[in-house]
Length: 361
View: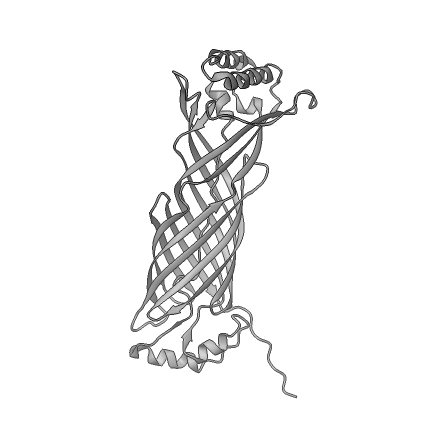
């Protein structure tokens, strides 16, 4: 019985997204007396690069902007709760489609869900470019693995419900786009980062998408003798929302080990529950028994469900060490709320494209 019930559960995915390239790389102004010489050098700089637009004006005001083009390597780990609702089940592709059974709502008296969670890790590369001193655009390309743990409560309103935990592990390919808005406000900096990613699990035919918004506030502490070097500390919050409806299908033979030899026992397990689930439940069990009896191992079980993260918001704390304007190393943790996370990343930045020299007639 547990084998057939596990077919009803497919892995839920949260696309691990790594936020913001600019926590401490927003356009900042060195105002301490010890940095006066460095600030004066910025004002007198002959900035000959295309990006960011208005970069020359920023330097003329003594504002130290980051190198415009970057490549960030990120490792991200996360553990969070999941909610599952509106579970549906169907059968496809038996005997050339003659016995197809469309998706139908499954009552929680037949299958319910307890505490569900997803633990995942991701490694991704994030190229980015500062279009203006306060706007950064980026892409996300990565791969990771997701382990979804789901508590299944089958026939939960009967005298002897069946309870077990289903664990599914699978690889995930991720790609997406995002934008960061950042700038200074008095002695601190603020950033708002938003992105959308598409995440393709191995066991689903289509990618699902997720939205992430991060809001952070921090302060940069510059080294006296090395104005390009600094340490930045910040706090913030992150909002996550994922695609609600998900569809999938799996072959009966792949979902149920030794299907040919266990088919009769599965049917008997369902028969044993009749009389304990009410009239509607018994009718659904009869239909399931009918479908299983008429299927071969190549038939497909189709499924659909609504899923969402348990809590949309969580708190963040982070830090970055900037060796110079070329190399930065950072770490960030999700520490408040249901979602726990850890990020570590290495960022490499360069000046990029030169402006075309003006031809004097």
